[in-house]
Image (cartoon, rainbow, N blue to C red):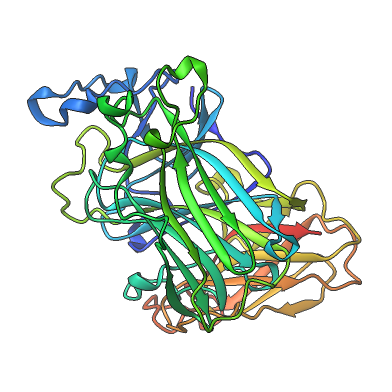
Length: 420
C-alpha cells in the first residue's frame, strides 16, 4: 500500500484555503491501494473513454502524509488545491555552483493531469532558504514571494499538453529570465514523446531523466530520452530536449554564494480547470533517482507534535498543542538551525531549557499579514541535545477568532532541525 515517503528529505505543505490547513482537499492519488499502476486510459483522456478503476488504480488522499508517499520503490507527490496549494521536498544535501559546475539530476513522470498542476526546482543559498518560496508570477497567492537570491526553474502552466520549462535568476527578490539561449527551445516534452522518435506518449508509468547544470555564470536544463530500442540504453538527440542553455543575465552577480539548498516543488491551482482529470481531481508526479553532484550532505531531523495521536499527522503546533518532539535528539554540536513556517505574530521558541528565543522571519519579498512566513532560526550554542521544542506566538493580525491576544489563532508547521 502507499506509505509515507520519508527518506533524508524535509517535507512541507501549504494550501491557501484555511479550511484545509489541517487536512488537504480530498482527492484520488495515482497508484491503487495496493500500489497497483494507475489504470487511466491516458492516451484517450477523460469522459466516456476513461477507465475508472477506483482503488485498483488510484487511492483516496485524506491526510498530508498521504500526499508524499512511496510506491513501487519511487516517491510520489500528490496534491489537489482549488485555490492554490504546494508541496516542497528538500533532500539532505547541498550543491555549490561556486566549486565548478553543480549537476542536479532526477527522474520525473511525464503524465500531467492539468495545465494548472506543475513542478519546479529552487537552488537557494543556505542562509537565505525559505521553507515556502513563492514564484514571482503568483504574487497574489497567500505566501511571501521568492528568497533574496535563488535560481528558479519552473514548468510552464496553463496547458497540460505543453509541458516546457523556464528559468529565472532572482536578485534582491526580483526575477530575471534566463535564456532560453541559442541552444534552448520553448517546445514541450510532448513534442519528443511520439512515434517519430520511437517514444511512447506521456504516461504515468514512465519516468525520464531531467538534468540541470549550473555554474557561477551559466545554466543548462533539459530532459534526456532514450532513442530507438529503449533496451539498448542509447541516448539520442532526436529524443532529447533542452529548454535552457544560456548565460545568466548580464549585470547580475554570479552564483558565487556557496553551498545551496535544493528544493523540488509541486504546485496545484485548479480552480475550475476544465482539463482536470475526474479520476484524480489533482495531480500526481512520480520522482526517482535524485542525484546531486558535488553533494554536501547535512542532517535533517523532523519534529512531530507531542500530541500527534490527536492531531492530523502531528505536523503543526498551536496555542493548545505547543510542544513538538524531535527524533532523534538535536545534536549538541554543529551549525544547527530550526526550520519551520508560521502564521502569527511575535513567534518564540524554547528548546526545553526554559529560555525563549525570538524567531524572526527569513528575508522575503513581501510582508503581508494573514500569510505564513518562513523561519530559519539558529539554535543557541548552549542548547544541548534537545528532544522537544515549544512554541508560542500572538495571533495573526487578520485572525478573527474571539480569543486572548496571546492565545489566539497562530500556527507553526512542518518543523525540522537542520545540522551541518
